[in-house]
Length: 142
Image 1: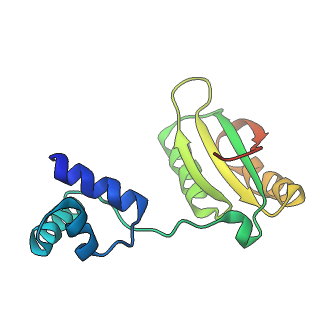
Image 2: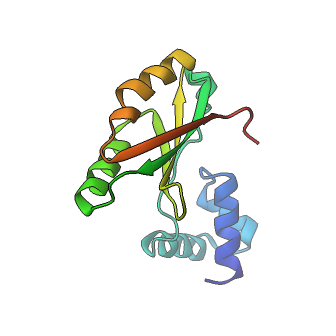
């Protein structure tokens, strides 16, 4: 990967819908050369996909909480079942496995506090292998 590839990636991070024509112009390459580089970045797994950035509030999701999960059991089958359940839950919008005291950090979005309580009681509290959940409300996203 060279400086041109890094510039392509930076431009696409700002505008994933940028046309190859505009992209080529901004990195000063021919359209065919730019398209080849873009295809190589996609095939190489550097660019994993293109997504729309959604405003949660515009979809009625005004309550965001971060949930720190401490696992009580960490055998393979429990971890696999936990991760499968997390991925299947639409209100959990991101999840990271951590080193340290906290095993996982989950980002959740719900309509309001009552919606979060429902998620906590019916989903989060029943996830396989969980020993402890600690939640914190997000005040502002920068």
